[in-house]
Image (cartoon, rainbow, N blue to C red; front, side, top):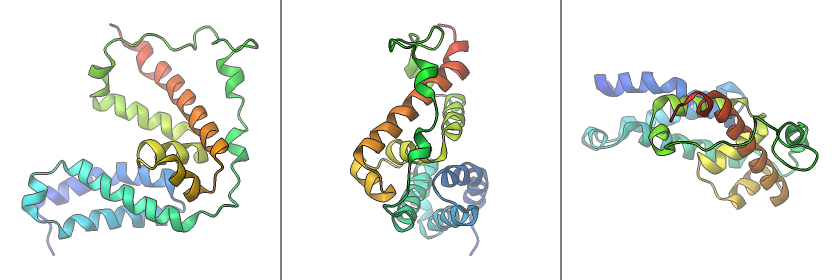
Length: 190
């Protein structure tokens, strides 16, 4: 079966970002590649007229999210330990002994964030920030924010308690906020 030139080109363009996203959730690499391949294969059966009227990136990443979620449900067991996700000393880096923000780390006022959120460069920085998270913290955050799973589904899929889930989400948000402040908003002038 031949793909139309535009669909084939688009698939080549988005395979790398899709694989990075899948690798965040699925190991080994071969299994992540299979999920990406399954998502790419799904567009083969889609009516070209439908594809022409669709945001292809959103469509394909939506399919990939479902493929990843299905694989995660089958892969993880409740006995998975998440203690290493909390082994960092992030609170001591961000807050002083009295619980106040350390100078230079506190969130600053972000000017016109709506304008900045709509740029490809911003999302590239977000991707880098998520990739820097500890793997298990990144999985929890990504399942909640990117795969749009609710807290119960994340806990059931990854075998987490609610306390572990909220701890992962808190740490992920703090680390991503710090990363964005240092790598994006700090250099942006109002």
